Length: 389
Image 1 (tube, rainbow, N blue to C red):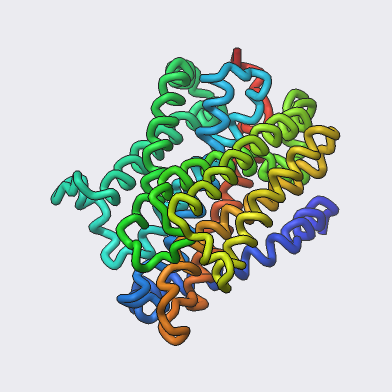
Image 2 (image 1 turned 60 degrees about the vertical axis):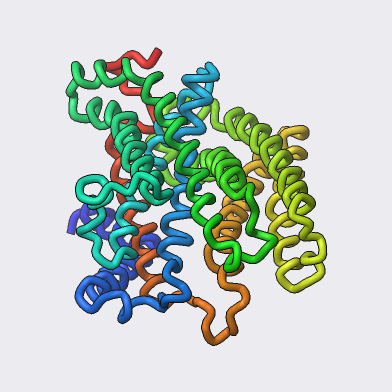
């Protein structure tokens, strides 16, 4: 055996590859059961709980965490912060893959996935929020594909088409921001039809605003969080400009996240006051709500502010990870934990192990595709044959 062959084989059997392989195998088995035996055999969904973790995590969380694409593009191309240009392609790629995985997850959750195009082609439900969400997600996925395509075209050497698409950058960015504003807020609006099912502390007429603002928070934090993980895993694939600006970018995005978190905290308190829900704070759900509000909104806001003031990049990155966790908790609270809160424990929803396996499978596939792309295409560096200015 040659030394090169031995090194290659050794590199394949890394902890990540072994864990990913196990997750993929189990996920494929759960996928087989889902599409051969139906939802009943693979989920704990019911008439009381028709939406489970495939919606609460794969859709609601996935769409929020994929918001880094429109947030970063808007910062660079609309607000003119060109010094953060190196963050655009990683953010766009993360957003693009996030939305692709959201659509993939919907095929698991919908009873008849082959009928997903029906609202557009057969029965146009233009007065439905779900139609608006579906239309915006489909259009924004197209926008993200076009925004990502220059990197793929540079890799393939298709210069003319790449140059033509880059001329549309500003137009695509504006269109993407408009679409994101619509469907991020509409995901929150979906729960406005369930005032008797969502706990009063999480139910509010401001839900669309809450969802939109938290998507901005998630987008800013995901750019920092994803950038931190990517630097550790793909440093050898990064250009000098990307490495030189990573700390400044983290601090700047952390400053912005701190301000948005502060505003979000204020309107959440205003929401409690407007709906006169103060008395609910003394209940068990009230303590859980305060944990979310103080522990995952006020605390990361404070951590971001301290880190930016003292120029502590490590603290900014910790705050980013903590904030991402808080966005996940918020979406879980609205869609599952505080949903059907009045039902007895025996009728409450808890995901089937296959639901969890499929969610892990989808996330793992996204990570593997991300790794495949960034190790081959100019995502973390500028291709020497093209002008980026």
